[in-house]
Length: 141
Image 1: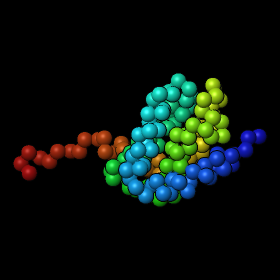
Image 2 (image 1 turned 30 degrees about the vertical axis):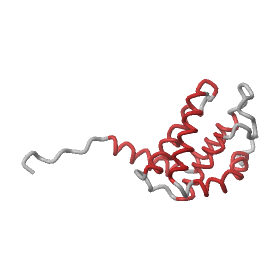
Image 3 (image 1 turned 60 degrees about the vertical axis):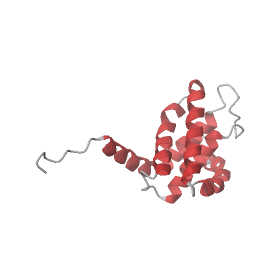
Image 4 (image 1 turned 90 degrees about the vertical axis):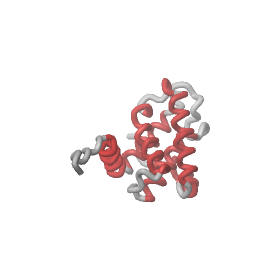
């Protein structure tokens, strides 16, 4: 049976840095930008990360822009820690190892998504409502 606490342990050393980085929206924006770039460059090797990572990137970007600030601090730190882990080329399984290199990253991102599931769902609902055009006032108003 797999050790389900392993992703949490892998993230542990990134949480302290994430707490510092998350205090500055510009740093969060930079982390999301670099993670998005890495995702695009290594798309073929990412497997399930291709599907899981984009929502965390959108959430981090929206928070950094100041558009969405309803995420609890603890959840934001966890999202940033997950992105920092993804950015680290040398982690539990170095990313340059073919096939296996992104397995630990996928486990960490899946853990983050489970841990902040309700916050991600709330963000996606907000995101969907922002994409819906607002009704225009009557022409006589």
